Each structure stands twice: as C-alpha cells, then as structure tokens.
Image 1: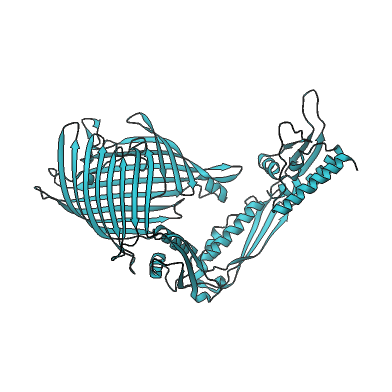
Image 2: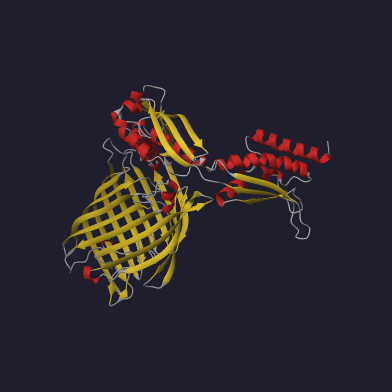
Length: 614
C-alpha cells in the first residue's frame, strides 16, 4: 500500500476512535497557516442547504489531511453523495439532484484543488395530514378535554407547512411537554411516524401519546431543613393537598422557596412511584445562613457611583422575624432603611414594619425623608397585595430660590400588582395592572385631608397570529404597551410631603431623560419639582434576532415614550423620547440596553436595566 494511502487510513481510524472515546463526532484537525490541505470544498446550493452542508457534511473533516491522492478523494466523494442526500432530506427535500466533481488546481489563478458540490433540491415536501392519537387516562377523563384540545390547537407542524426533521422533532417535543405539564406526569411518546411520498412531496404524520394515569398532590415531604421548620417550607411552597398535579406550580413553589431568602437552593419533585391519587411531593432544601452581610458597589448615569452595605438576620431570637438593615451612599442619594417581616402564616399573609432615613438631590432640590410604616402583605404568582399605615415627613430645600419647606402626613394605604403574563421573566403575551391607593391627612397647622392614586399597566401583544407557521409567528415579535397615571387630591393651598407628588423620566417610564427629571413646567421651563398629576405612555416593538435560521437569546427594540407632570390636568406639557435598543435573555433576567433621544432636550441617553418587575 502506498505511504499516502496508509497515512489516510491511519488518520481516518484515529478520527473515528477519538469520536467513539469521547462520545462525539470526529473533530476537524486544527490547521495552521503553513499546513496545506488536500482540497477545498465549494458548495453551490440555496442558502439554507449550503449552511447545513457546511456544518455537517462529513467530507469537511478530511479536507485538511495532507497528501491525499485523487483516488482517495474520489472515494470520499462517493460517500459524500449519500451523506449530502441524507442531510438535504432533513430539510424536507427527498428528491434532490446532487452533482459532485473534483476540480483540478489552476496554477495561473492560484486556486487549489476543490471538490465542487452542486445541489438542485427539487420540491420541498409539505405536511399532508396530521393524526394525533391519545391513549391512557386522558382519553376517559372529561376534565382533560381542554388539555387534549390545547395540544391539538398548538401543534406547530400544521397541514401545508414545509416538512423538516427539525420541525418534526420540535413538534413532537412540544406536544409531549404540554401533556406532562398538567395532571399526567408520566406521559410519554408512544410512537411516531412520518410517511413521506417523494412523488407527491407530501408527508403524512402520525403521533401517539400515552398519558398514563392522572396525578394529584399528596403530602409534602421536607428534607434538609435544620434551622427553619418544615412547616415554613410548606407555607412557602403552597402546594394544596388533593390538587391536580401542575408542573408550573411545582416550579413556582421552588422559585418561592429560593426567593424567600431562607434557602440557598430548593428542589421540588413529584414522586411518581406511589399512588397517583395521592402522589407525595419531595422538597429538598439547602438552608441559608442565619445571618448574612452583603457589600456592593455600582454606578449609573443617573446617580453616579454608589456603594451599599446590607445585613440580614433571618430569624431574630424571640420573635422569629427577619430583619434587614441597609445603608446606601451615592452622589445623589444617601439612605438607611430597616425592614422587619414575619414568617408567612397559614393565610399566606405576613406582617411587616419598616423605617427609612433618606437624603436625595432631585434637580436643584435637596429632599430629606423620614418615614415609618407598618402593615401586612402577601405575594403570589398572579397577585401581590399589601396594606399599611404610614407616617412621613419630608424637608425640601429649593436651592435656586433659597426656600425650605417641611411637610408631614399620615396615610392608610393599599397596593396591588395583578399579573396575567404567559411566562415570567420573559413574557411574550399577557398583561399586568398595578396600583397604589392612599387616604390620609396632612399634619401640622394645616390638618387637611388628602388622597392619592397611582395606576400603572403594561400589555404584551404578539404579532403574526394569523400565520400558520410557528417560527414565522415567533419571528414577528410583539408590541409592548406601557402606561401610568396618578393624581393627588387635596386643597390647592395645602402642601403635601414632597414624595407624595409625582416625577417621571428614566429607563422604566420616559426614556431619553434622566431619572425623575420631568416635573412641573413653570413659565415654559421644565423643572424637577413634583406635581399633583402624572401621565405617561409608551409603545415598543420587540423582534427576535434570527441566526442561521434559529432564534437567538437577543432581540431588537424600537420605542416611543411620552409623559408629563403638572399641578393641573390642563397644564400637561408632554415630553417625548424615541430610540432603539437590544434585549438579552440573560441568566439573571431580561437585560435592556436602550439608546434614546429626548426630543425636548435634544440629547441622547443610554439606559441600562436588568430584570422584569411588575
């Protein structure tokens, strides 16, 4: 055997052995600038087919092996013919014309030896009939009719859609995911078949799903707790004995435990080995330390550099409340806050008390705040509520006019946040509504009653709902609407504490302006003085970024915001901001990066924000 042939066989064997040893496909040998390859590969085909062959054609891994003879390359080309046909078939092209030829090097032009692959895909196979067959408990259970219908309605590979292996696999996984998400924890894919007729370019699909028995929640077994009681785990988990198994509720229970601050980690699983009618739930927790100190540094375009120190005592001896004390120092804001909260009771409500000392620079106004409040609150996936009593004193020093005011107020307050989003923290549809309602009296010599209302809302409207193809619907993106309105009702001659008034501007309200830069307008001049009425609105188009035909974790955004603050509704002078941005589904939540132009100030501002809050 020739030496070059021996090298070829040894190299091929080593590649295959390496793949088997590591459980991966053989990797292409590294090539340097002084390593000459055996041949180049030129692919002439539609873009999606060319991209697929460039990534997965096995011929690619041999092109850098040196000294391959033409006979050896011809042998590889014969194998590549079938390989290319199989790859193209995964995109739904089952009768392609594939021509592969070896092109000799051209010394005058400096071109190397090349394997030229030409693909004429022919007609793409379309989905014909779709047959979804259910077996198991879901068939006899009338309560599961809606679930069966939902699986059928959300089937992503509809009749008339282009057929591809990736789309077929994704559709099957989506159907199975919907099956096991509610009641049927042991659901499985029993069988699947795609009958393709190359003559008619049609694919008949059949999928059989076995639901297994329906599961309901039984007892909650807690493991890993030492400092905090098992009942505390159950109160945070909120899993009702006898309720239907719902996967999302187990995920939410796990999230509540990790968000509570009492546990560093939590794992909530359903025991499917026991009686489905009383399936135990196992909760494995890793408890947080009884005390924790956190130090932080940061910076923003609104307030400059800042540092903070926070101490948490999770279970204060004698009362079992949590105490959190935090100090924050920045260019425009210095504060000390102490928050005390009880453990949740059986009703899910918790007692809370807090105190705040704060000094802010708002425009040219120095504001000092002293506030105490006490009340109760509860949090849930769909609705947060709180009611509390509050006493507040603010002292505002207006530098420009050398005037100082001091105001006090006592109020009774109710706050809520109602959410109906399809997923959090990355919603694509749904809405949220929140508000704060206050009634009280101004203290001191005036002794005047007043009330305050603040409402905010947001809605996500998916686009492309009329499109049958799921990928096209997702690629169309969504419109996001945001609005906010507020009012303080009090005698015109009465001054309320500065923080009871309204300011706007910043990355969550009117982009293109500083945080709380927009206050009342006096004599045509914008000030940072709070007003009694507030109105803001915005609309944003978010559109996913697609790469190589696949959705990425990035999106583009185009938006328009507007807002105004005034002491009378007829005095509203709206300020508008427009801009573009990017969104990233980061591991810690949505990352928002915006560049906005403030039309009134004719300036550009960069806005950064992390997380989803409503």
